[in-house]
Image (cartoon, rainbow, N blue to C red):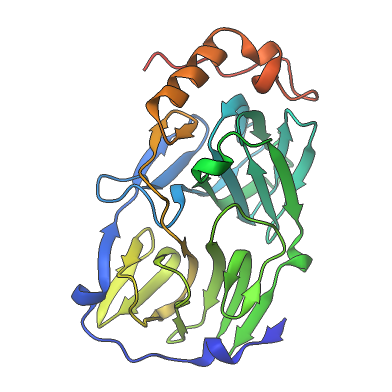
Length: 313
């Protein structure tokens, strides 16, 4: 862990109404054995920078005999998935042949390019003591010149990510560049993604080298311009303003993310993201027509016994 003087800067801020562009209250989504809180996309905002999807997973505890997270193979186009855990472990398998466990503090980055399939499972049964799961999965919409690219996967262990500290605050830079640091995984566009843990009253400045910036409160609360925001809120800030976010009386755990906006809006249907509706329709037909047996949507070699069918709507 390295000391970072930039994190010590506490920028005086004005009225929260002038600085917070959007407050998003996530929607609860039942995924069978567990529930997520979905902040993006929302009716108020489709993306923050290139981030088009944001799910908080848990916190939940799976006990002995429960199935846990068991997401069968399914396809993606036009996006990169970012999986980051605070608690628990998750087994990723994809059509590239990747077979990778992810644990707290590490990151899985899967670039779908033109097409990929993957599964995510906790591989129950659990021990009698159970298994806790708490984390975040986000999707990054790919720029147009990367939509037809070759799929890829990369994993970065917790010990490879920049870990910064200043008085009362600790920050892990998971992706991209911010606060004078660079995370190790190559990204298709300008973005940043960080995990920040703040003691009560500690303030952290948002990076000023990115157009779009958002903060999601995982635990505790934060204050901006005298206004308090509890856990389960995403705050999206105006571009260009110098802003600090201060933890409330119980401290705070935050995901801070953003980046450059894309060259245009994106279409989103099921697990597909694209710059045109035609790309979405082509992917739907490929999955419906059995392309999971071969081609761009073949199933993961180590998890090819089942798959999620195309939804009716």
